[in-house]
Length: 569
Image 1 (spheres, rainbow, N blue to C red):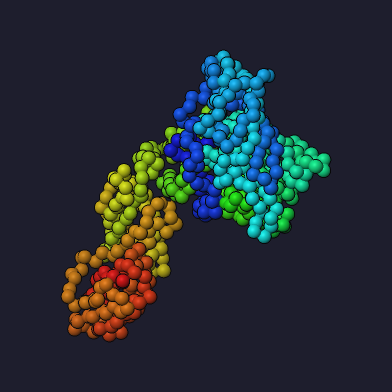
Image 2: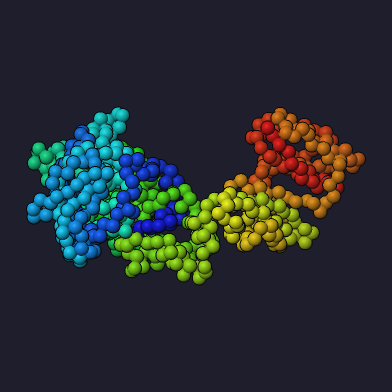
């Protein structure tokens, strides 16, 4: 049921379920650039076949960086072909390719070319026998549990283009394999975690053979195994709709008790995703966690590999089981969070559920258009401008606000927007404005459709301050909010010096009125950082502990109402 994006919108929808998942990505440290040893051959080659099944049968020893064995493929030709292409690192030696009889092959530039004669629309199969040292230590991990524990572990990792470094494969996101089997033979004192359900785990005192089957479509980079002296825990959780999910944990013995104790909220987390995204796509198999030492986590289908079972990491990787990966975590999550703010929770989550149930997309590859279409249908509006700005464009908006409250209690708010990249002229957005004053507050949702737009809104209390984007509903940075008092004549009675100030700022008021003067110190965001009454007409204020930057000071009295700017260096 999992859908994977194949174009610009390679984003994980999990990040829009709340800020929790934005934090999860910070500890998922496996994302990195494509290996220097690999070029994107999958976009240059016409493979001309559709993978139906793959069986990996490998022998490994966690203490040795080496793999040997075979990979059997069943495939359907899309046209008549005389050469079948497979991605495979040159560091792995192919011993033979067999299809009833031995086939000729050539291996160079991380590509395996197999001479074969197949007519169009034919189901065929072959087996590749190979061995060697996986080329990329970042993709294929072999090491120990920790500095304090020297037990060896060997783990595969393929995202985004690393599968070729340890197995023959077709690195093409548009062709999911219908089903896979993973058979790993290792020394007797080790167990292997992998995708799907465990068919058998045979130990004869010399070797251990773990046999896993996964009967759901899967992308090449989500096929994985990890082998070490795991301590295994199996349990079940029940959901409100009656579903029962097998939970399998493969954990280091030395940290087993500590890690297993962290899963007390797993049932609630599953229920949360059931409520907002629908049933677990692989409920007839399992969901599991396999501990590894590579750092962070990876959402291998039905079996997340992760450094520990900390709550945010567990939730983050679990959410991937409903949705695919993305190219950019931070922007991806924040853009979707902004879209949620734009169209509202009801339309947003309805679109997600409809997207997941779309029969044209289930177990298929989706494009930006597909997800955009679902959001537009649920929100009953066009989102072309939003997608052009945030998905195809670059940068983000920056805002400057000036405000005042007139004698009729109307808030007059002027919005000035600049953009950080010339690919977007203006971001049309709803702005979250929080208004405070007189022990009251209110939230405004203002549709900013052009630059230097002024909004007039009645507020039934005297305004003390205004905050913008307090809940990080939209993407922006360093907004300034300044109270505008231009309607009051500025006089020369007030002097503020020096600016820039380093240790002390002097305020001098030379008018003859003996009025009470109140001061407010505000930072560049308009937040009040200090408030006090002026004790004399010439007073020094200690600013030595202020951070460097621009500040504002509001001076209010019976005849005075001014805002002045000063700088601290």
